[in-house]
Amino acid sequence: MNKWICKSVFAAAIVAASSTAAWAQGAAAQSPTLNAVKARGHLVCGVIGSSAGFSLPDNQGVMQGIDADACRAIAAAVFGDASKVKFVSLTPQQRLTALQSGEADVVYANFTWTMTRETRSGAQFVGVHYYDGVGFLVPTELKVKSAKELKGASVCVLAGPAEVTTQEYFSKLKISYKPVTFSEGEEMRKAFLAKRCDAYVSDQSHLAKFRTSLGANTEKYMMLPEVISNEPLGGAVRKGDERWFDIARYTHYAMVTAEAMGINAANVKSFNTNDPAVKRLLGTEGELGASMGLDNSWAVNVIAAVGNYGEMWTRHFASSGVPRGQNRLWNDGGLQYAPPLR
Image 1 (cartoon, rainbow, N blue to C red):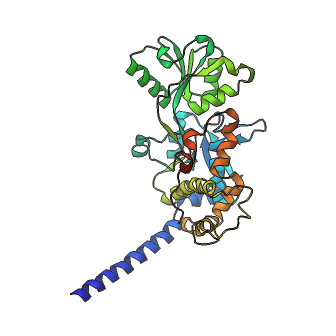
Image 2: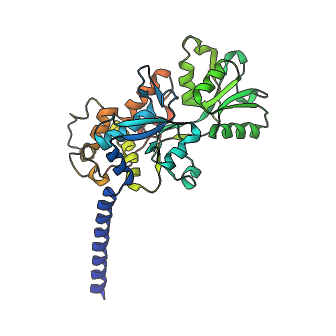
Image 3: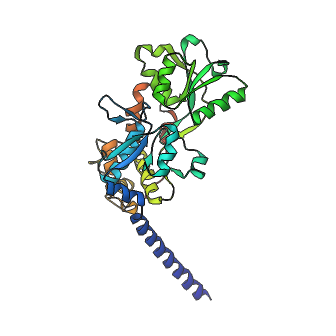
């Protein structure tokens, strides 16, 4: 009986190992999205396109921001070339539709990870690359110190989730207000500066960037202390293509891991170590890239082109005075944490 049990267990282990190996090989070759991206020759990435720090063209027309760079990082992982990405600007209402219809391969568009976006809308979030929260910006001449003092105020807000969050906040406090809704960020900013609204509601990261962008008029506006929601922002892909999900997810984690290891854009190609974990990340040991259908230098290409997570964050937010806060690495008191790449 014992021999029979041992033989059965051994046989089952062989079958399981064979099945796992077959699945891994098949999955690497059977990503419809990866195949389509390679055949097309570039990644299509949905962004807001009007959000400073996340995605906004510079004066040369080049899309800049943490969302834009996350897209470039995926292009670098797939092609070894971060420039092989086409940006499609989307309104908040278009983000899920663009993903569902296949108009975009991935969406990084100030996109909050929520339960129903995954359970009902076919989106799958690859991780959180910015921990944020909705807040308020007001003119100092309004002389208010708290959002609780905005009774009867007109409030500029984008149609969609921020609109709902604002309504729920004031409803809970039993405070009446006048929502002034917009479908596009630039239109809302112009309306606020033209004094069509008493208060401006958006993610705190955006409020800080917007305020700083006002130059000499910066001190005429202040952020109120209330943060009325949790907004874990990240990229999303369509459900059903697990290999493409892996590529997008681990591109982000490679950048987080690189920062923790002290690897950056300047030293990634010359980094010398005997640490097996570093060697796996850099592709000199193991088959991490091959496990996703990519070249084993995928992570090196990402870091060389875009930098580690800290470099990306600093490039787009440090100058505005936005504190890194929860977006620090876990070993520095933050929430950015990557699973082992092994």
